[in-house]
Length: 196
Image (cartoon, rainbow, N blue to C red; front, side):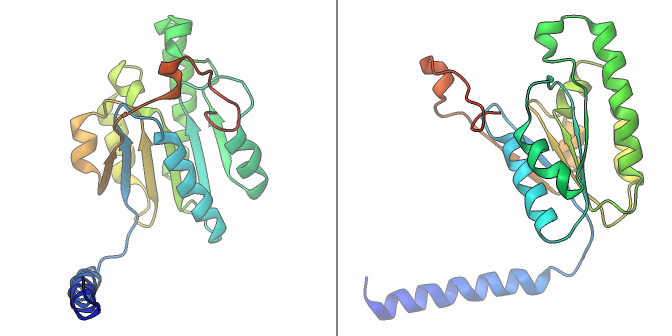
């Protein structure tokens, strides 16, 4: 490709991008969903938390279906003022007790509702919330109501596989992570600092 042709192509791209930027006038918090069967949903959410904190914003995190093992994200972010509330019962396929899992979920969800009502928080992460809805541990309408009632500037990130279609429709941004290849499938153990 010639230099002139490259410049023309880049100029056209610039004009398209500039037009989209000019058309974006609304400023408010957004609802982001990271879903799909691929690895990286929680990692993407924490990348956003790190970015927000780096810009002086306040963030808080609810983690459903997580255990009590060391949490690198919590170790890094909590000293920077990020509140973590963790269900800490472990994975539901290990506990296999719907009653205790529901109780643990409901207890952590009370913190989630508080966070979603807190105007001092710029970003709230509801990590693995999709499972809580699909397993019936949380009422979908209660989640929707809490999301709709949050402060207008607050951004929320929901992660997890199989996100309910009503949450997908509500969301401003949805990214679906698709598995192509995973080390675990080749018999490689999950690694602290990389996978968790």
